[in-house]
Image (cartoon, rainbow, N blue to C red; front, side):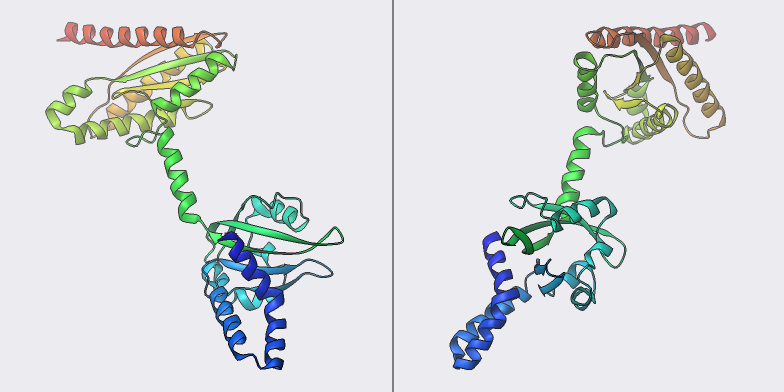
Length: 320
């Protein structure tokens, strides 16, 4: 497909006009008809096929009409009138890549990924295959085609997101958490603290009020944790009712203060809410050296979290 489109681009941009002139002169109706059908094929392509001259001056020899399907009406005529118009539609972060392509400083054997803005202001992901044309060692033109791959990229981004995030809460998932822990355990050496949060009585809520209600409680808890610990922290849901906060460059005292402040925020929420109240048990642990200590850190935080849970149960028994 790639070779065919390059060939068609070359024929359309450079050779077809010459063939037409010769065929018209020679009266070769059959061959003229074949070339006409080839031109129709190029013009009807969904991909944007082009032949662009760089030197002696920028100029489009050919742009297929599909450019208007990609970016909007009027772009075909505008491209011929202003050969530099592509700089008006390229994403700012991809502008340097476009410049490098024009200078021949990209790997033309690989697809060039760029984002182009359509006339509604939305950016589309595009994959471009370009073939440079040299004369006496100097880049003077290029032919190629540009294909809209927005749906493909968005699907890849969604799959990448789902591989690292919990669907229900939007927090990082256990898979991502384990990768981060592994990095701190083996590669990154720094002071670090962990806080484990366990949503109390989730099973009872699910059994009594149904999983829909349980999911609401999980989502509310996740929202509060994310908003409170969002700065310089990684927050993940690592189990059905369990969350973890990874805090690089935090001491034990800082982690303890954060737990106290978060508990105060939960109490404030419960005092004001008209919905079901939240109850979370917390446990923290820290170390000055993360390498080789992350498993032990997680065990310590887990023990303190369950101690906190048991202390609350004992308090409730005394009060009752």
